[in-house]
Length: 207
Image (cartoon, rainbow, N blue to C red; front, side):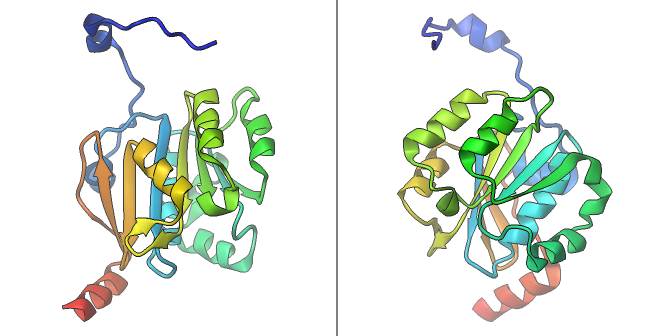
């Protein structure tokens, strides 16, 4: 049952949150976010989205266990390539790839003691989540951080559910031309260059 008791200003002022302590480019990008809730990353195919989200997973693996539930690509050669390029072997103790695990099975896994703290879901579209199911997932696991990866339509997340996830998320990151452009409620905000050489080519072509 939900706790519907009103919260005082003093309680809000004194409440302690579990923040992610980030450094360097990640701090500039994300600020000081909570280590729970939901984030969303979206971009067109070939924009650098897969590489960026894997690099983000590697960063978060330094703060706890990471699950990557790939409902779209699964354990294929292209995923192997991304994992190798991002040197995920460096964080192999804290990173586990799931091969198209249905959301209900994922929830069973997350109910276990010492389950992963950070969960990547690729993608919103392949998860087949509804808005209500998304809310239920976040509410059931209030101490975990879900990072949703989404296809894009133009410069926006594709579909009504992905758009709903964006509005609910503390951190929203659009990937274009091998750069990540963040919108964060908790600081940060500087673009992150995913692949300098490819980014330079892309943005030069637009000039």
